[in-house]
Image (cartoon, rainbow, N blue to C red; front, side, top):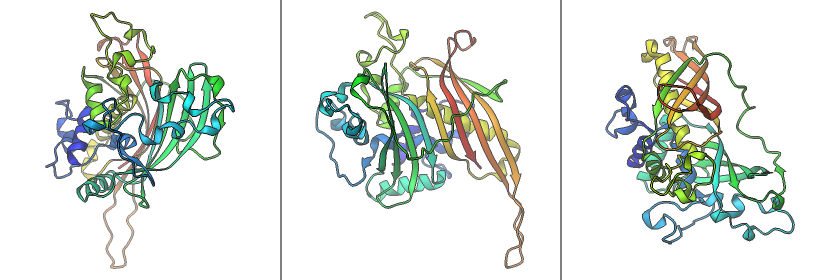
Length: 374
């Protein structure tokens, strides 16, 4: 619903800055004439969606969020064989022996290809909910790779999201997660011949960035994001469930550790600022551009982010503004030439030790690439 779309936008920072408030009003006010969903809303569909061809009912348990109207974790597409295919297990290992439900699952990489414009995405999602049709379904989900390592096992899966079975895809995603602590001796390496949607890994950009912006994460950021996105993984709400990934969470009982922020929440905030960069770039010709559409996005999560951390996005710009050539129509008229912007933005997100110093900074999102059209 529009309420869900607004809640998600708020959870990744839309509307939190006076400097950008007017630019972001269309994402947080249902009465805005150009109201639309945030591009990163598609992240949440991974957790709210049901599997294609399955009419699953949420489990009724006080140990998951179904009684509160929240999806359980892991979501259906990530459960058991959907997360770790049986053919990737060693012959003497059963899927039931691994206890995947209690194993920490850490998101390490995300790629997205949008098949529709932001306007069409907004119309499709809001129309589907208003007409009480089935929710977006995860279809043609398949495993792309399984890579056992000493720290655990990395699993990459592809999901195609539709508004309803048989419809045009909204987007195709690839998610890589780490099954933290899964004994690599119980898993076999697997590489699928299927092609990934992401392109080759980009090289880290050299030279100063075209633009950078420092921003803050709120103390309740992860609590708001889990509610809006449906990612109810306990590691983001329960300090005792957090894996020992960082010395920051080794606090005493009087000072519990700050919560671990979702990787997709950090990426959603980065997408928000990438939008601002593009709009600043075309500000002089803003009237020529009616919409901004993300086409591709990919990034790797390299270090954990805790609520309260100070972050900085750095952007390297490789974009062009071209003018379309007017073509004489059959009625003899020649429409006005239009400006077309095609952006390829490389980006990183850094965790700073303070808002005034880059000393001790660490990269938390690396190898980020976004392709945008206006």
